[in-house]
Length: 230
Length: 275
Image (tube, rainbow over all chains, first blue to last red; front, side, top):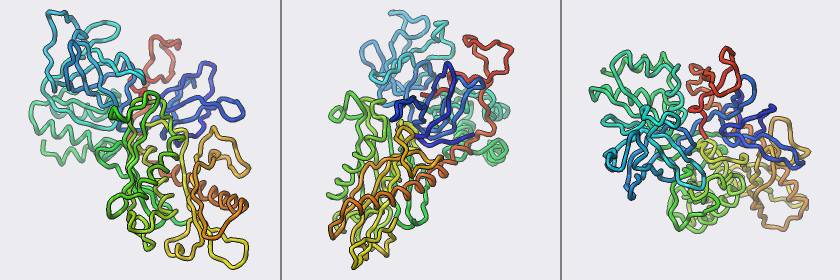
């Protein structure tokens, strides 16, 4: 539970050390290598001390490979689609990067459609690229166009909490009414419910539990949910 | 030194924002980045820093432009700009107080005094810490040092002069330090605060000063900057109470790892690893 500011040294040591987000190995003035944090957050590590990272919160998404994101189609450039995933650059999605797509049989996307896609290429010098199928099985596995529903923005830490199967929010909401969700790690959550008031209730609960705007825990959220008329 | 207040604003539509105050001398800063950049400002090797400063009242004049250049020279060495080429990091800073000396009121007044400049630098640092999306080499902390008018040759230096004392000062300046673990340790450094180095200063006096006075002003400022660093460290406690108690690190055994399936090892799923 140790909080660090950027620029502080982190005591990470292992034979096969793997540094995750927020940590960099820099050399100090006397030539030694030091593991230094580059963002504010909690220092976390795996049980065997091999993987270390900084757990913090932010609102701006920086793409990394193999992450599932929700994107909005903004333009078409030839065979490809330009998709906004909330990063500094627009992402490119090949028109054939779907399960079972051929030149004759292509998914019919429009400008403004929502997609659940996987970042296949993310390099700091290039534009990110997306694919709408799983890397190993080459099948859709939930990726593709999201029809209908409602898009909610949240902080990046909230998305990671929602992706945790042990988090309390979605089971709690799911026990009250049926809902369909897709969580993108770029700070976007897609909700699909039968009634608009249910959608609004889910959106407000996500905002309430978000560490940025409320940070309610389970008991407080149950009370808050009771005040919503759903 | 006056009471330091740090408030993480949570402004809409920006990625990070913070308010910093030395007593009643306050400023607000917001940071957005890395975001899309206009092709004219694009740099293929690193991120572009775009800084805008606004006074409390009136429009931004020459002193705002000067402050923007100063902030750029302070923050460019303290961020890892090469990690995000062809992007923009936008900083907007604003004074939250117009003082008796007329500072914070644009070119109409006498420009920004040293305390206000220091609070602006600290507010920008806090906004970067709040944003979390731009990698930082270290934390920049700034304080102001004033020199009292005196008849004898030796000058009396005070740390963080108050608004009421500003009229009695014969000189003042803001000192900005970068606190990072990669810097060499100085004799003054302690175990819990990383070593620091001076990034920028604008120490100016009415009567001439010598190198000895500048170095003693610098030492005094370094002590004050350390206190500011510790206050910033305390203020980051908001990261702790973020529903972390109900979520533990995921206990998921990855098949491609060398740990056996029956082990109690705690591994993190790739989804949670955010670059």
